[in-house]
Length: 437
Image (cartoon, rainbow, N blue to C red; front, side, top):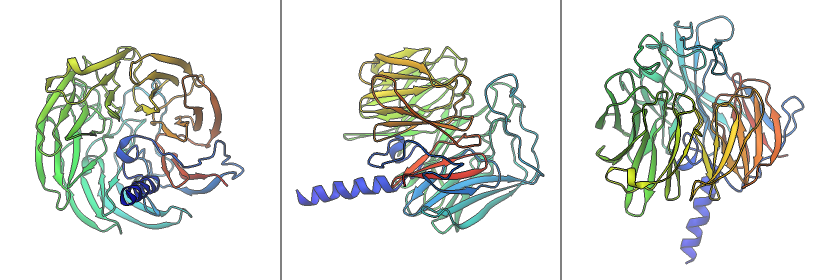
């Protein structure tokens, strides 16, 4: 009993310390016992631990292991700031950005407590093989780590694995991540799917204009272990892993199908029709014995699915509930204490009973605010990052209660990370560390 209790304590402490991938431990977006501040001021330095300038343009999230923060960036050989057009309007359009010039893709390590840059390594130099959207970046995939390896998918430039000191271990070409407007290959928008470390494998979802697939690569040497073909349109979603009693499933979100595969072999276990959608971005959310899948275009046609794992073949009879016209275009939802929170790109926040799908509320956070980053939850508070540069804090619960609005002073596209009482927020020009003083 003493050993079991000690193990639980140590595991909880490690979970509070490390944020190893997109959306943190298990992709949940949850970090409790953090004592994150409710309010802060970048201008006044209140509850601001540090702020570090970031070169280049990247929407990848920071990750944390031990006392270090790791992140990627892409630096263009241009004068002035790179093009970044916010929102989903006629202003942004669907055109690629005019920056097909030489870039350098970098991996950085920062001291978690001081923000000091400990090292930065240039992984690749050259002109991007594919274009990006004016709202996107050439470094939108969040890296992943197991404490021994740092894995970064730098768009079509390749899948890279480094040791924790930034020394390159291997590099693998995963093919073109040709994602963009479906059926119009000239509209290249840039990849955003993040790599996933599972046991001794690195898993990459490559839904593109043609010949889509999901593949696993050996973490030791980068060699392909298995590949599963997918009849899919372009997508930007990241896979998720469900771990149940005696069962493990790799769940993916596609424009045509929601799928589950065996993560060790690639064998397809089940699929569920997603409808005739496009532009799938949200990652599947594993919440206890539920798998929640959202996202897609056209706006208003999306459905939120709550699925019971364990199906075989057609998973229609494993759908526990659905919510129509409720699904976000970009952000991934978060679940906390039996409630599912869904933020739509236009700033409408909804809360649902995770067990039944009953909607508790639906409200707009702020008129005109846009959201691309995915929310996180800590100690009963939901932190929602807006493109316009504000971090909203909302009370978790069946009734909506706004707690705070914190301005960061620059656009925010990346999802935040949490470690040992510090909230890490990546902006268009800086990485911020927010901590209660």
